Length: 306
Image (cartoon, rainbow, N blue to C red; front, side):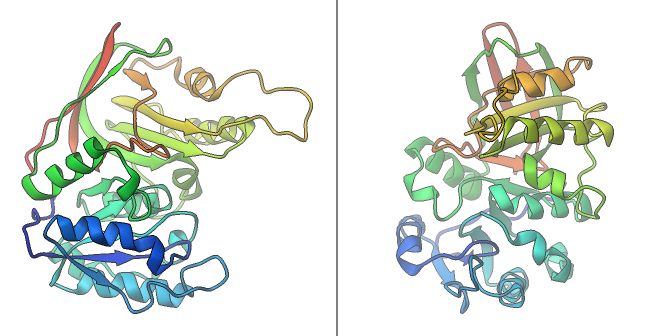
């Protein structure tokens, strides 16, 4: 796995919107934070464009990201926000220059399209971490961890309490994944992950429970769960029953996932603090991690040198 170079004071970070539209006012807190880190912030010419719910047309969004990927003066890309739209431009992008001179791509949610595509097709690590819209409101510990990864390559160990559904075990492997709905939407395409012998991380928001069950069935039937080294289940935020049907599904989000992986033997942890929550702990997608799940706690530590 190839890791982009670390940042240093004076480097330029580009703000890029590949999904829903953003405003200058919405970006100002992130710009102030990045500036306080000693970084220069580049705002693409079409960053504040709007095409219905999108941040400009597909052509505008693709052009903005392509320019940032190709510009050697830009050392990292922080995506503005999620929502939906990145998959509409992924096939228009040329990663030739990016392969030669990688840079950190930072974001989550809809940005899972890029995490998955780049992991599968370039072997370059990316950062599943807060977006420009969410980073300023993240806990200081999350901001410090992102800063530490980007500027020093130091990745702190994350320890959380055990969940009753956890399956104990210990493994070391490459970590991949992101938003479950987005990962499933990539099925059958060149952007879909190979999960064999890897630790899979999944999170989601705003789905019905039967949708979650259907997505887990897709992963199982497409052999994405059978050969994992481990599974990390992050925040499953606002996963509810379908209000139009009177009979409840009968399981909560974690119980649904547990029912689909109960036949396998790898370690599984639930409730990892990453996803659509304020404490969205940064994870290097493509990085090698050691996952230890026992009766009292879960420990995730990086087994890499950035």
